[in-house]
Amino acid sequence: MKTAYEVLKENGQISREVLAASVYGELCELSAEVPDGAEVKPLTFEDEGGKKVFWHTSSHVLAAAVKRLYPDVKLTIGPAIGNGFYYDFDAGDMSFTPDMLDKIEAEMKKIIRDNPREERFTLPRDEAIKLMEERGEPYKILLIERVPEGEEISFYRQGEFIDLCAGPHLYSAGAIKAFKLIQCTGAYWEGDSKNKMLQRVYGVSFPEKAMLDEYLNRLEEAKKRDHRKIGREMDLFDIYEEGPGFPFFFPKGMIIRNLLEDYWRQLHREAGYEEIKTPIILSRKLWETSGHWDHYRENMYTTVIDDFDFAIKPMNCPGGLLAYKRKLHSYRDLPIRCGELGLVHRHELSGALHGLMRVRCFTQDDAHIFMMPEQIKDEIIGVYKLIDKVYSTFGFKYSIELSTRPENSIGTDEAWEQATNGLKGALDELGLTYKINEGDGAFYGPKIDFHLEDCIRRTWQCGTIQLDMNLPELFDITYVGADNQRHRPVMIHRVVFGSIERFIAILTEHFAGAFPLWLAPVQVKVLPIVDACNEYCDSLAAELDAAGIRIEK
RNA sequence: GCUAAUGUGGCUCAGCCGGUAGAGCAGUUGAUUCGUAAUCAACAGGUCGUGGGUUCGAGUCCCACCAUUAGCUCCA
Image (tube, rainbow, N blue to C red; front, side, top):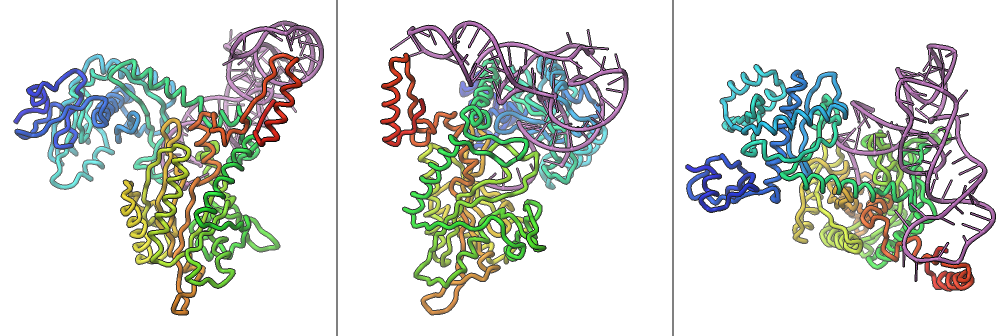
């Protein structure tokens, strides 16, 4: 057996840039032994796998530095992520603060200067646990206990530092030529808010100093197109202390907003939608029927009117269902596509608020489609095409996720299975790639989510298509079939923009405030150079204004 | 909600070890009409997030609350 390094060397594929290898598509380190004749590919920082290994080793350097400075801190996990790495520590009652990062960075530099090897070794379960007991790492013991029977339990030694880790890693830490600890923050153990909050340190690292500079530069540039900043500067919208999470839209922001709505209405008219408007406040009884009172209560604002409980709607669907029920429907009328630009209010946690991206009141470009079961696939395909058309119009890239039944949900297993398969079937027929999010669906049905990227590559959920076989049941809605009998329709909830507010935020960042002409609040600005031009400029402005051009003088 | 940081005129920020606020831009007025982001001058604008406390005295120190920012959780 040869190591990956030896194979690559024989093939003349080794250079200083090579960080790791891929063997039959599996990520492995250069020192790993590979089967004879195996196909070995070199990985550099340009490859996803190379980055991952690079950042993973960086996280070990971070952890080693923290252990040197704060020996009582307990190790948990420290993976590579999309743009860097982090390591979570249990620091007891101590909280990491930004000024500690400088000290940790300095210690990391020392470690990297020593260029320690990343040495892999494996241990049987009992010895592995013993080692971690000796080193006082209770979280690692927990992790060891979870390693399935028969699987190797591997460790990496880096100087005096030893960590339970599946790897792979760089040959040695000296390859890390530039790094920066970005921030420290709290993060829950296992990502569960019921668990203890750990101390997380985020960092990035690169094989060249210039790459770090470029990265930091990009972050600075991204800050400049933050929609909160541009929104204030361009006088589009803002949020005040008096209304946390409740945004104000100013005249120029309203121009964009109204144009988006005009565009939306036109598109939906063409796609066979009709439009309604349902009340913002509705009786508690309605929310009890829909299940929201039981499943969504903490997020709802409530009020009392004439001694009766009411709630401000967090979703439009119950109103939409009442509207459907106002009369008898024939199978000939289906599908009914009923849109509503509905203003909803949700009590989001204060720490979750984020400009227009995450607010406590927003307008969903909602629509409910009522149909016969055999129409499901075509309708979903139709909605997908609508969403794709809108996103392409603005030049957005998006990713798709399918979310399945959550724990706290209503409805029968059969209904959920049928609905989930309906969504899956449509996605597969469209030949789309998507990620499955187990247990992430709405409480009344599974959903397909569309995620758009913002300027610093955070993704935001915008469009969603949710198939619902539960609310039609709870509201006992029907249609009259060809057999003259009552049947239960199936319902789709869907949004394209998602929320007008969030969509405007993403547009603002996407275009850095330079909106396409048709959306620009000011399309033409008339600037007189000298007073002699004033009169002409006035008449020119009047002419443009009369032609429906949005001008400013 | 949790962890950390921040909160000074419309905006961006300065204000050292506590002695009672400063700049640039924006605004107003006047002058300038000069070729590609802000010419000159004057004026106006702040109970320093809120409420307590320490002190002879607090923007500066302490406490509580509110809001914001980053991340976690959650989500359109």
